[in-house]
Image 1 (cartoon, one colour):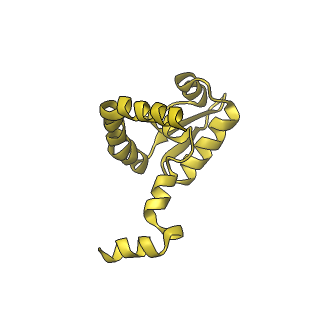
Image 2 (cartoon, one colour; image 1 turned 30 degrees about the horizontal axis):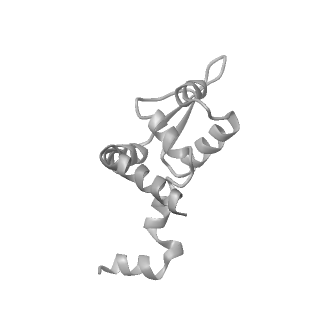
Image 3 (tube, one colour; image 1 turned 90 degrees about the vertical axis):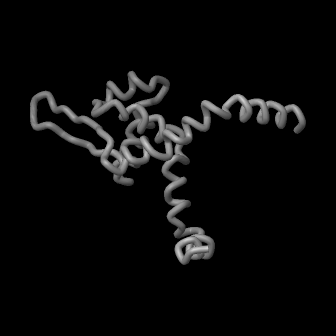
Length: 124
C-alpha cells in the first residue's frame, strides 16, 4: 500500500477519497453537473432541463458546486442582469471521467442492481 493510501486509511475524516465521494452525496449535485455538460446555462434553463427541482434546492446545489470549484458563475454587466453557470475544467473532468464511467456501469449493470434491490426488499 502506498504512503497516500495509508494516510487515507489512517485519517478517514481527511481522506481525499471521502472528499471526492462527498461530491456525489447530494442528490441534485450530479444532476446539475450533467445538465451543465452541454455548455453554459442560465438558472431558468437549468430548472427547465432538470425538472422537479425547486429554486431553493437549485440555489443550494449551485453554491455548493461553485464552492467545490466544479461550477463557475459568470455575471454579465448588462440590463437586465444575466448570470450563467458553466462547468470548470475540474467539473468537466469529473463529468467526463468518473461520472461517465458510472453512467456506463449503470447502463451495463443497472437492471441487475434493481433486481437485487427488489429481491432484498422482498426478503427483509
